[in-house]
Length: 154
Image (tube, rainbow, N blue to C red; front, side, top):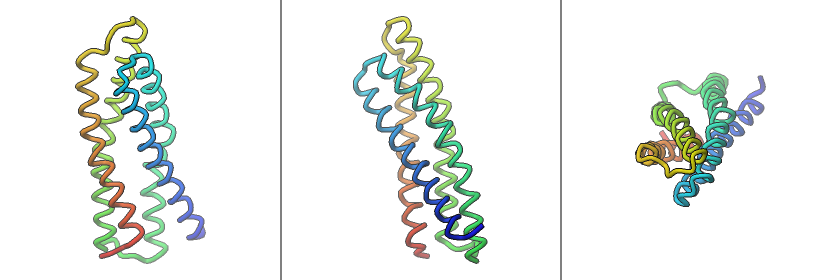
């Protein structure tokens, strides 16, 4: 595969990965701040779908295209910028995996509350706090990864 095509795939998939993540987080946050159970149920449903369609697929594509570009470009795997990128990607992934589970549970709890026309249970809000807590380091990790990929400072 041509390096430029591979780089394009890597950039497009990183855009989808980060864009879906930030977009989903924004809409989930805004829906939750509204406290509108029906809105939360709808948004949570589509956030889970978006995570499986876009985030999961691009999260797999990123390391595949990245490592192949490293190979083609001849960068040593022990380069500090590359090692830090890998570590930060693993941190973001370690945050994302429980977030997926939380989002599924939050979706189900919100759907049940909307169906029965009741308030969201305390467990929902506990999951939401954990979801936010895990999202902050994942977001920060991706911001730093983008900088490392562009600057390759070390």
